[in-house]
Structure formats: structure tokens, C-alpha cells
Image 1 (tube, rainbow, N blue to C red):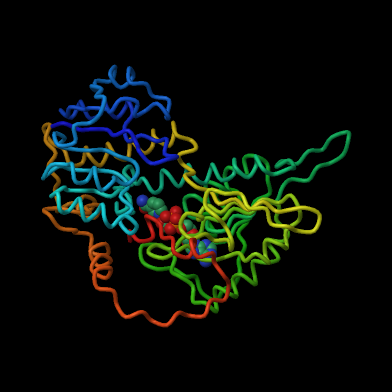
Image 2 (image 1 turned 30 degrees about the horizontal axis):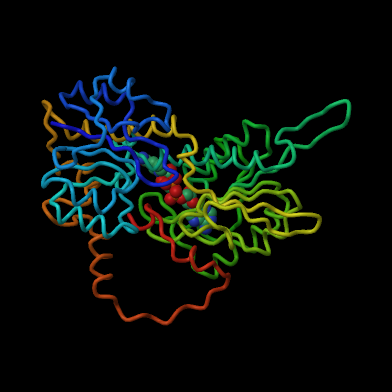
Length: 410
Ligand SMILES: NC(=O)c1ccc[n+]([C@@H]2O[C@H](COP(=O)([O-])OP(=O)(O)OC[C@H]3O[C@@H](n4cnc5c(N)ncnc54)[C@H](O)[C@@H]3O)[C@@H](O)[C@H]2O)c1
């Protein structure tokens, strides 16, 4: 069977869905791999390296002749329409924000697998692209902070005087947050963190951070160990309790997310204004609505404070900024899922496997992922608009509208 690897089309996307290592893995399974010319260039992989690993290179992919298409970013509607009935796609599909493509995939009779939907169970960890890419994002958040921070991260005791270590505060200690804690710690900062899941205190400590217990009555834990959205009074209380910790931090990194919801607002502009000049705020949740009021994805916003500014950074495409290693991990996730569905050179998904059925988005002409099918049905027959709730802290219109891949995927 023929597996195509696409050259990513979205602006800013530098990753690729296969590496020479995974090409070898797939050819050993009896699959034929065709890589679109230049697909790996941004990740430092030449066409020759793919060829050496056993792939053929095509100037453009003949989409209608592929049995499987591997991708990073959600496919375009045009690509979805060009695929043949029965073809399989594997990649990030961002079902909540890409409904037209999901509809086109179903209409074309394509069997699509969304990596965001892979169940977060131990057996599926090697296919968990959310985790592998969150790891890259968390690391990158610290690098972006350090590049903008006008002081040192580590403690320096020199003949010319002592420089204290930077104080880094991480809000949201999931995969990305924990990686940010570990990276900032390794760079010599004094790191503290807060999360609302009960298990997070130990996880933060295991990475060398100090856990800030806000005593919010009870931990907000939903199903599968994920966080639950806080009620507005508790969210407000959380912001009040966080304010002094934020004010005494030099670098703030926010990564908080709730599956199926926009990112929670944890930091208001007034809280940012409480930080000293030169401080840096990195919002890793900027693309999904933002944890920080006023953040713009892909932009630095200077927030005026006494004596200068605080730099508010809306981090965008973070894993793409480290394309080689992000691709290496991502490609492995993709190949492992494909391997799970392949026997004797034939791709034949076994839907009795919870990993396979859990990741399946469209199949046999229908959208099989219920939340996505419901979202589409709702869009087609919009319910009567409920009166808007009074907001306690303002979000920019664009941010409020945004929803992540993951958010709507669950
Ligand atoms: N394969 C697996 O078994 C697997 C893989 C990855 C993660 N997990 C688990 O899934 C859970 C979520 O991890 P993730 O990285 O996907 O998280 P995520 O990206 O969904 O969210 C990031 C973090 O934000 C936190 N958060 C949400 N609202 C908050 C608020 N108001 N204030 C502070 N923090 C807030 C969440 O608790 C979470 O830790 C964790 O328990 C993690 O251990 C399991």
C-alpha cells in the first residue's frame, strides 16, 4: 500500500510527518512510502535522506492514488476532496475548528485519524502527539522568555557583586508546564508553579519546582485526570490569590487548558501591571484564547509599567520553532499509530482496539467522533442564542472566539 507524506502548506509550519527513521519503520512493515519533494527541508531532512531510507520522492503527491496520507497540520478542504474513497489519513485534524475539512473527509469516504483524539492511556503513550508536542512547546516557552528577559536566569556570585536568580512562575502544570518547570530549573531559575489538579503538587515537586497551594477548597478534577473548568467565583478567587505571586515573579509562563473549553483566564492586565519593568509573560495558551488578558497569538505586546514595560508574548506554533526534534517525535507518534493498524503490508484498522476507534474521526462517509458530529449538527441548526453572561474580566474578541484543536476535540 502507498503511503504519502505531504509537504506542509500552512504558513509558519516547519514540521514534517515522517523522518528517514520512520520511513524505514514503515517500509519494513511492507508499505511503500512516497515523500513530497522538499517536505523535510524545514526540519533539516533532505530528499536524499528520505530516498536513502527507502522512500521515493514525488514533485507533488498524486492524492487520488494514495492509500494513506500522513500530515502534521489539518488538511485543506481541497486535499480532503482529492483523496480517494477508503483512503486513510493520520495527523492533527483540529476537528473543532476545521469542520469544513472534516465534512469533506467524510463526504470523500476517507477514514481519518486525528492524533488529538488518541486516548491518554499508557498503551497509547508512544502515539500521543499532544504530549510530545506539548513537551517541545514547554521547553520553547522558556527559551522565548530567556531571549527577552534583560537579566540572568541563574544566581551569580561574582567579585563584582551578586546577581539573584530569576523567579519563574508557571501556571498550568500539565505536560508543557512540567517541561517549562524542568527547563527553567536547569537554567538556574527559582521556579514555582500552580495547577488545580490534585496530582500536580507532586508532579511539580518532581521537576524541582515549588508548588503554590492556593487552598481553593477542592481540586478541580474532571474525568481521566484532566482539569475541570472552575466556577466563576472560584476562578476569580484563584486570580486574587495568584496576584501577589505574579507580582513577585520575573517571568510568568502560562499553559493552562481545559479539554473542550477555551483556555481559562488566569491573569488580568492589572495583574501583569503589578510585575516589575523588564519582566516577561509567555502565554502558551494564546492560540486557544489565552490565559492572559490582552494576549495576541504570534505577537509581543508591551504592557506599560512603572519604569518601562512588561513583555507579554502570545506564543504561536511553538513546536514548529524546534522543527527537527518536534518532527522526530511527531513522526514517531504517527508511524506507531500506522504500525498498530498494519499487518502483512496492509493497513486494516481494527476498531475493537480502543486506541484505533478513539482516534477515528471519519469513516464510511460519516463523522464518527460524536462531539464533532454534534458541533456540526449544532452549526447547521443553531440553537436559540442564550443571553450573554456578564464577564468579569475582558478578553479581546478574537481570543474569546478561539478554540483549540484539543479544546474542541474532546
Ligand atoms: N498518556 C497518558 O497517560 C497521559 C499523557 C499526557 C498527559 N496525561 C495526563 O493528562 C492530564 C493533563 O495533562 P495535559 O498536559 O494534557 O494538560 P492540558 O494541556 O489539558 O492542560 C494543561 C494544564 O492546565 C491545568 N489547568 C487547567 N485549568 C487551570 C487553572 N485554572 N489554573 C491552573 N492550572 C490549570 C490542567 O490541570 C493541566 O495540568 C495530566 O493529569 C497528565 O498527567 C496523561
